[in-house]
Length: 76
Image (cartoon, rainbow, N blue to C red; front, side):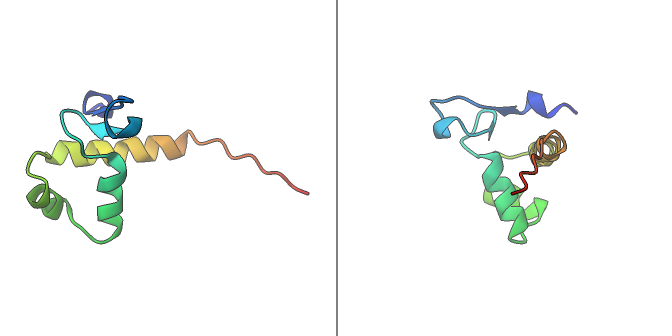
């Protein structure tokens, strides 16, 4: 699965934050809820427009973002 098929960003929706296509559900919200202990099943119940593939896409998006993060070490 390619997460780019499920995630979009538009400056007119949620201030341009990445969202699940066709919703106003941000990737940040999905990750935050999961970090608070929500399961995939919990999210599917709370947000009926979500699909399991959307949640997996959010996780893939976050891992790709971190994998491509560039760390700059500034020592005094």
